[in-house]
Length: 168
Ligand code: MG
Image 1 (cartoon, helix red, strand yellow):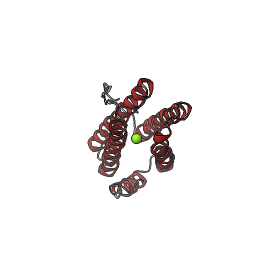
Image 2 (cartoon, rainbow, N blue to C red; image 1 turned 90 degrees about the horizontal axis):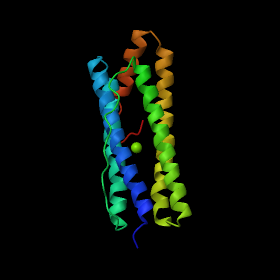
Image 3 (cartoon, protein in one colour; image 1 turned 60 degrees about the vertical axis):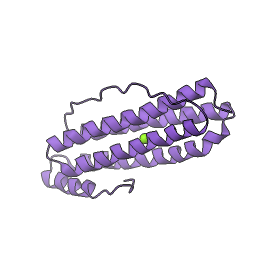
Image 4 (cartoon, rainbow, N blue to C red; image 1 turned 180 degrees about the horizontal axis):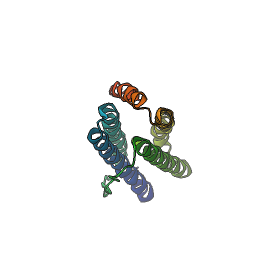
């Protein structure tokens, strides 16, 4: 039996939020490219790719459950940032919003007896802990670098070394 229309809507909203995340991070990648920080840009591109895989996990789940996928509108992401620090702070705030949305979905599914959804949502709950931890760490490292250009270039090298699927 398919999920209720309320849950179907909630999962569709989550798919749209994950695609919106892809969009947010691509815009951030463009900011870093334009500001001569190719390693930061590469990190954001991989982050964007990861968001697409998140969206598709929910997409496949909705279809497997016999429900209907309806993609929502994706808002234009912010395009102006004052500094790399501001970008990563915005990224952290975005991930906190995604975490809250996943917790809401988990609560809705538990209350509705939609136990099929729980393993998938557990995976996402763990994933969000990692996402927030890695973004927080980068926020702190940018703060430590401060006005030190050499430290920022070192960090750019570090972030540029991220490989697909490494999670960092
Ligand atoms: Mg995500």
